[in-house]
Image (tube, rainbow, N blue to C red):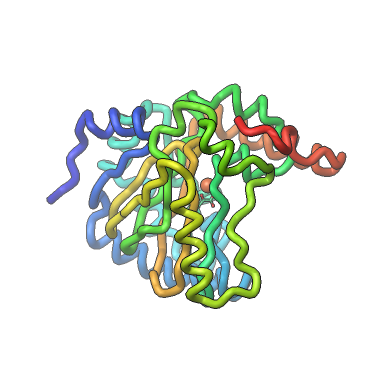
Amino acid sequence: MAFAFTDQHIDQYHTQGYTVFRQILPPALLGELRRVAAQARQIARQQRGAQTQRLQPVGKYPELDQQPFRDYAELAPLNDAIQRTLTARHTHGNPQMLGILLEPGELPWCTQWHRDWRDNVTGLDLAMWDAHFSDVDYFNQTNCALYDDACTWVVPGSHLRRDLPGEAARFPQRPIPGPALEGKSYEEREQLCLEYCRSLPGAVRLHLGAGDFCLYRNTLWHLGNYLPYQQRATLHDAVDTPEFLAWRSVALEAAQKRREAGQGMSNPNQAR
Ligand SMILES: O=C(O)CCC(=O)C(=O)O
Ligand SMILES: [Fe+2]
């Protein structure tokens, strides 16, 4: 059935921190995007090895046919749904940001549990992150699955609040550690990752079908859990406003300076 936008999407975005526009990609565009995603996987693995997580941004690779990405960026029902959930000022599909998330070629692995920026940008001044934590103009991210995708886990509603006591108890240290996978077999890694995903209270797995588009707040607790036997090509992007774009360049530059000055994370042990 063709995708239809409802008020539920707005409600889910605000209350859960994410919403899914089911089957919003038309089949012809899905086919074109799969074709370029296969090329992207080859390039990514040639450049960064079989375990690489992504190719990003797609605009950096002129050898990739950019037309499907332009068609994706301009897809009218998708822009309409994004703008009805957020505002008419929000845009997506900038080729200098848009990436593709890929399955690993050899071994299972997962990212750490994290809130983006707080936990995965070393040296960020966390006051900058805190200031816009609940602001819809900032921290919007998207995953659009070209194949069935059950990699992303989230703690629904965690975008509304700082860490709960159980979350702080689960991860008292900064930086947050991932599971210990060194020297483990394929199956051990798979089991350890799954256990790790389930270990944060309230964690649920997000299931996207081919052509489903998830809009989420990256201030949510979330992670990616990856298996070589589950093919993945998921478009990964920010939803931008001029303010968020400007914030990112200031934040990244400031973080770089702090790292160079050896200041590292601004609150290495304090959970927020
Ligand atoms: O793979 C995913 O869906 C999530 C990836 C992620 O959260 C990240 O790389 O920051
Ligand atoms: Fe993330």
